[in-house]
Image: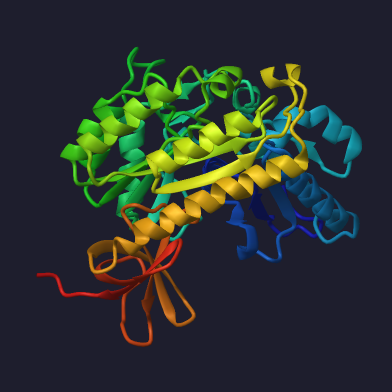
Length: 439
């Protein structure tokens, strides 16, 4: 496809939503570039004549942002400032028919698994030889690695299986090849993502194979940190903790969204686990990997959540003292099992409960950070911001977790390098540090 005056297309890909969507956008750009099409991510190509919007359809706020972005670029197209507008991703997967009717200015809508169809609009072919050679949009020293697609879980509140389909694992060989290519291009930290990490391998290897994958990736030269995101707690393969304890490349970090702690709410959510089983898992993790940082997310305001059930969650968080935690407010999602319940917790109550739980976590985070004053940490320097270098410890993932701040007026560090630092002060969510010499 060419522009009206015969010039080659310039394509801007816009990503909305989570890191899994970001990887999808990176794959779109990789395939376009592999077909000699000029494609870049978001603000890197201001004179683009074609825009591809990769949407999110997970929760109400994300859906609203996606619709607003589509409308914004539909107006840009109506003014004649771009030639073509395409929409892909989760929102397009779920609501394609409605979107085609309501926003006809879009030239074509594509679902989450329709990359070949999108490429066809550019007279481009899907090149299998590009698998593993991915353009990345993150800083060059870290990258996300999606190890599987889809989800077989039946959580009553979640629409992901409706948008992403059943679980499909990638092979260990493909993932090792991708990791090696990323490392060759300067990536030092690999963040493993999926809709559900612990299910990895059941479809192709007939067993939970994440521990084997971790060992294989830890062998890749140049990869110094491997971080685990989005692990489901039920039937958790505890061999993961063995791999974490045995291999220095695997970060002592686990993102394990628990969603709730009250057994009644967990049952209505169809989480297939109890509070008692959750405590047992967390205690085992901390015994096997004493330095582990556990990140979780909680969902408040689920239908029929009583004051007592919410207080049970608060008490659980106070007892467990997670290193990292985020909180979401429940909203009805079309087609999910939870639609059978009345959304009977008011918006005001949801907000109040969210604020209450985050206030508890903020105090826990502050206390845990205070305990780090005087200790030394190895950090990865992500960026320079004003007069500060911003880094992360092994306990922190980009954008969602704590940061380590170093005075750039007094010290020089290189972005993308590791540095040994001493913690000299601590805030609720950040640490203040200064470099130290390696002994």
